[in-house]
Image 1: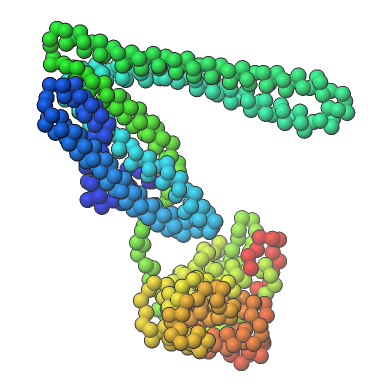
Image 2 (image 1 turned 180 degrees about the vertical axis):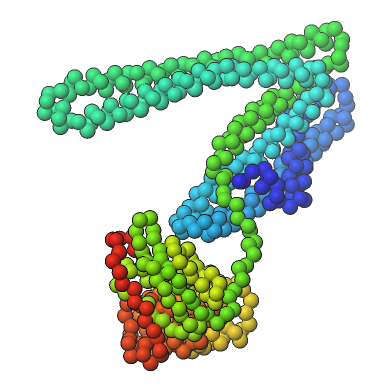
Length: 525
């Protein structure tokens, strides 16, 4: 859940303190005009030096306050940047951990993240800024003159009463108009869609009466809503006028009695400042309501940002399938299968399309949990960390050969060069092959397959799973890759539709044939 605790946790303490400090310093903008202009009446009784000092102080106050606001904007952007990094990191990790489709994860990263930034991160910093301005304005107004300050704040707040009083009726009228408008649109659509039959049965005139009645009701509801809005605005305007002059009248009466230290300068200062208290309160209430509306958007599955790495299998690679089957819903994808594949053995999984060959590979890879039976590698339940899984669609990204091999992990150049030589890529990648930039567009299909295989060989997993890796290659390239792989010491399990039986016999490759009746369409292969 993205909430205030989450926001605080993802900010350095110094940045949090600086945000609060400059929010309060920038909050003086709300009372600056009141303080500076409120001193104007006093200028009539001082000399030129005093007036020049007044101008200098005023310039310094405005410059300092605006500078504080400028720094606050920079700090807010720094905070939003950190929050965005943390948010998008969590989104990506949550998508990966939950097995979401790529399109879903990208939608989170773009649309959802942008919505959270606009409707929550930016709203939170705006809320903090308005809250600081409200507190500063309240403090200032009360220190100028506590009695008149309370009077000005009370009358300023009274300007909100008409809108509060009319809120329910405006909401009700808005709902009534929305319903009437929906009926009008439906009636108009019926009228337009039904023209052929209305013309055929000479019923256009009578049917249109229904449309006209819906239209008249919709416009009447809109007129009622608009009239109520005008009434609320008029009442608000009256209260604003009352808020402007009633406190002044009270102040004049108190001045006539000579009490409470009230002066014209005091009244002018409060007149220019008190509105910022109620304006700030309104902004805080509106901002808080807006934040509440983003609660569903901010719900994200929790993800440990630094998950402990799973242990990597280091055994010889003996695979045991014990009554393994797989069912999706009521569709049997893989019939119960039992087989022992010794460490270092080479096995070809064959069978017609839809029989469950790829499903079996996914079970051995630990990517699927079997419906019945068990899959073990060296006596331990199969996990993705125990195997190297290479598919026809090799994952190669834009980067150097080194980056594609290491994936950010630490390996020596000698280790990297060794696996490139094993797969026959060293001579094909030119000088300094490890630093050569590559991408799917710059490598052939065979080179991509070899690079993906090299990535797996680098990690020395005991089991190598191959899923139709030669389907897109010519016969010569496919033969070269198989000759490379079948010379490796790892346990190799391959799914292929097309293969050379002489090569299988030469390399002592056993065959596991899957063949049973499946219900249609849902089998994975």
